Amino acid sequence: MRHFLSINDLKKEEIEIVLDRASTIEYGWEFCRSMNNKCIASFFAEPSTRTRFSFERAMHWLGGRIVTAADASASSSLTKGESLKDTFRTLGQYSDAIVMRHSDPNWPEVARMYSRVPVINAGSGSGEHPTQALLDLHTIRQKWGIVKNLKILICGDCENGRTVHSLIQLLNMYNCKIFYCPAKIYAASGDHELDLPEKYLNQFNCKKIEIEEVDDILSNMDVIYMTRIQKERMSKEYGSDCEIDFFKINKHNINKVNINAAILHPLPRNEEISEDIDDDPRADYHERQVRNGLYVRTALLDYIIYKNPIFHARTTV
Ligand code: NCD
Image (cartoon, rainbow, N blue to C red; front, side, top):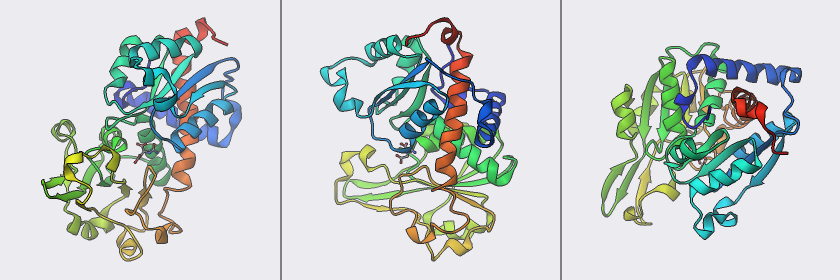
């Protein structure tokens, strides 16, 4: 069974196929196979705007169908104590593939063991968000042509930001140089940095930059990837009166950014990107990046679903 639960579930060659297909889809819809009679279960047990809508729109574009739970943490049998294992078993009876978002970072392992249909990770707590990384890479590829040896600066919540975790694994496949600037928390219980988890620091070569130093390297960066502080995932021990310091981009420092750079953000944004730079030509987060979610997820659904023999063998509709 081919799932897409982590970035590592696709080889680099396969990622290239999906992204090339995404470009083809953008310019000519005749390359899409029809998913007539095929159905995905779109099960979101955490909030989502872009990811859920783009997956569902992608399935419509492929001519397929959707059964959906937008508020599954409140409306599904999870509230009655049903396990994730039983949830996957059940959803597989009603759909040909599952798109899942849930706050438990370990749910992908449960899916790998118990799902009888392919599962795509649309966000696993503070773990991974591999489809966001694909669309981020696609946006970088469009901007720079070739993604090789690029310098990427990642700012914000590097500890809890799942998009960051998937993206650094992906950028590493392309020999990019990763710089990162974690946010800092000043709390009565002590200071804390929202640093990259150790498993990534041990595996990849990422250079930490202090908040005060970021302005000095902006002109040298090819991509600036901003993220919000994930307050909902932060430890309660910091208390509501803690102070958080993080790098912000605004009309005062935008002129220091390399003229060809891409400024990206998985969204939603808070104060880390000021609205006064939204119309800058380097601000690719609102239109290009969001729109790419649709093309990349269409290509991915097509690829993952057709890769699985079960898809040809049975139909649920
Ligand atoms: C992100 C997510 O849900 O992880 N958003 C997204 O899917 N585009 C980022 C976030 O919540 O900060």
